[in-house]
Image 1 (tube, rainbow, N blue to C red):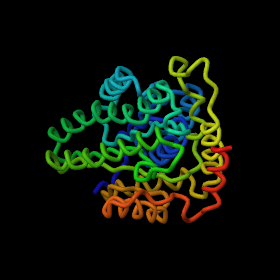
Image 2: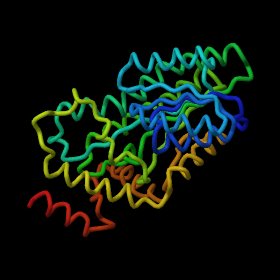
Image 3: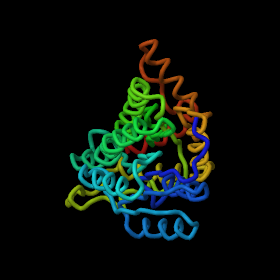
Image 4: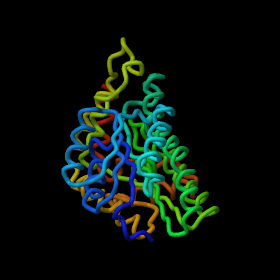
Length: 302
């Protein structure tokens, strides 16, 4: 259990907005050293200015987490400035919707690159540093938090790539937890599975690299519908990113693995797992709101 955060170092990807920014704010309040990474320079600059004004020691780097060499450079810079970090928040993520066969190769490369490989690079680069620090100092304690989503435990229709990437992050995080437990008692891991929370996720295409943006393809009908549904769901979320960030720090202190923003949404996960256990066909995701399903089918078949 980790209760003292003062003077400890946290690495946060996606620090320019959403959960990354809110976790940085809590970290600054707790007197932590902050390593802030984001792909969007102006958002990163704003975060840095705010954290420095709050008195935090800050190292900032513009990083595209899908690029192995950039995450490796972040690791080297962290080690040089602060030593091994105590906390790593592999948080950067992007969203993309539409019927799963309509996603282009570039859609797949972009979403898997950021959401899955970004977390993989973070785990690969920072875990060995943390293990070395634990070996050198019996008092060292560390914790890794990977941001997945409720989409990592469910499979809502019309957001396939996102679901695939987030299921993989849940799997990676569960494995990381078990693997760490084999080799150390000083470092553990958690997975964050937020439901719809107002963050910048529904507008993540703002940071899509040009080489992963198909030049000649317009969004399909299903992608436009997916974007509109995502904007609405994310924008109308009642739980704030700041509240979720607080839950993350509480979970670290309690060594709690699964972190949920909306514990009530777990009912849908139970239904899915019962489908698996009973080998029954997947339950209609709109069973509790049939009008949504009717609307979506009509829009897609129109």
